[in-house]
Image 1 (spheres, rainbow, N blue to C red):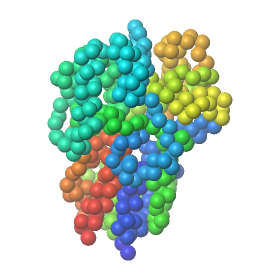
Image 2: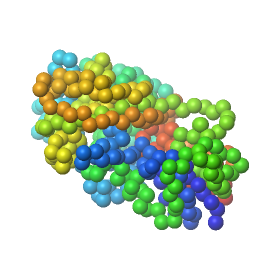
Image 3: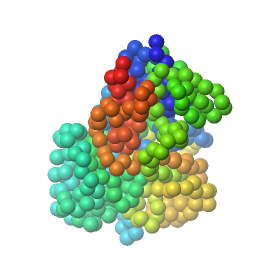
Image 4: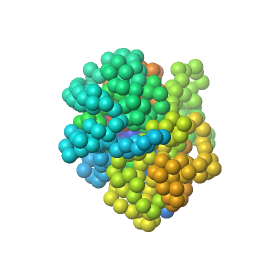
Length: 408
């Protein structure tokens, strides 16, 4: 029996382990962290469940439906649409295709003209029925270029598309390839955004429970890979026959490698005493604010947490860790956008998510298996190989194992 070692216990590493077991192998799963999940982790603080970053699960992802039991996750769904906060006026957006009684509200919302509304409908109907493989056509057109060429007005781009997709892409200029926009917009058009009631950690936990013949080693940081041997930070070693690197691996090898760029962000959490957003996401149409999204997590889940308060999550784009002083400035900004000067807000903490999303120069839905082979007996997995999404992270784990098996 070959010794298959997988470094990284995010969703790509866990899906790789599942596929290894399905092929008849056992694996050793290794992670430098004290818990599995990678970027899909949660922690508990004052009876609140705080996710590592604001993450949503799109129910229409193909790999999500393949590898997860969505019913068992006890998902809580966001209402389609959003609240948009801008300097001069606030707006509430709804999806009239799912909430027909909201049609008049959307027509006269002022966030775009009638042509914009028609183009949103036209685009959503086109993308929801388009095959995923055909969306990833190799185009280098940016999202902003696509939206302008499609005919959308600057008003709806600035008041909706920029704030909404800035929270998804973690960049606020819509420089991300239009391919990614089309893929995500199509998923939103067909399905719903949700989070598990017990936090995003439920996703890796459920994947891990599928494993029957794998060994988990946590708090094991790999420093070097050489001659089919891993060397850990503490000097211990582990031999392997096959290795799958489902993590940021550039520091391991003493070679010049093409560096993968990433967008980073900070997640702040606050407690308040009242509902503010219902089940919709709050968008900030004000680039100077630095805020990307506000989400009322407790309201989404159906009321107060046991801590006798409501949990508010705020996402900021950032290259560095901000301190608590920045959090208190955020409190002033939140009060300003909600127009409640005395809104009680208690700062709970923050997470700086380094390498939150890869900045992929080329986007793929599928790639040749040879692209998942680093060198003999070493294979790669991770969303950076395909596109920045949970779906791609899962699929990359599957394809890494296919590449491994092709070498047998």
